[in-house]
Amino acid sequence: PHTERAYVGCIAAFAKFHGCSPDKLGQGEIREWMAHLTEAGTHPQRMRQHIGALKFFFGKTLARPEVVAFLSWPENPKTLPPVLSVEEIEKLLSAFRAPKYRAFFTLLYATGLRRSELLALDLGDVERDERELVVRSGKGGKGRRVPLTRTAYLILTDYLDVARPGLCSAHADSASAVFLSVTGRRLAGPPRD
Image 1 (cartoon, rainbow, N blue to C red):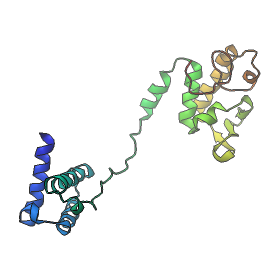
Image 2: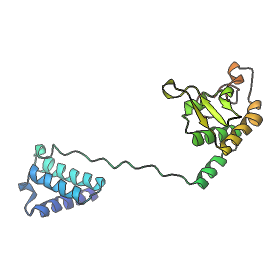
Image 3: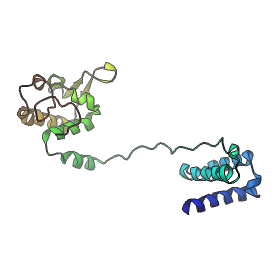
């Protein structure tokens, strides 16, 4: 019922704009109507409703689908995602109780590294004196140096000095990997343990 009412309203507005019965109108008048709606700043969602009404009216009701075949569905404008405040970020990151997770997600946020780059980090890639990470397996095989904020550095060193030694095991890769699973192996995917 809501869609029917909306479509009837759209077709009525189209007919009123041209001052005659909609079944007497064609592609030229539809193009004028679409131009009018666009110039009026009609939101893409509302434009889709008008296009749907026109396609239904001409395609189904009048059996003249060729009249509206040229119409294409508008896309919603691309919008940036909402940005969290500093307080929200701090609250989110402090919610991670385990030092490993707190370090992992703090570095992910603070450095902009890809998950795969973070998981590939070795202890030798952490330059404590410079407060930097050396990314050797970056996109396109390119390496780069990534500075650490003071907070990210402190959280990382806390994990490395306090929590990580308890995760080490006899596995060969645990000697070099920054992030380890509870079994002592290099973390290979999103932290799940």
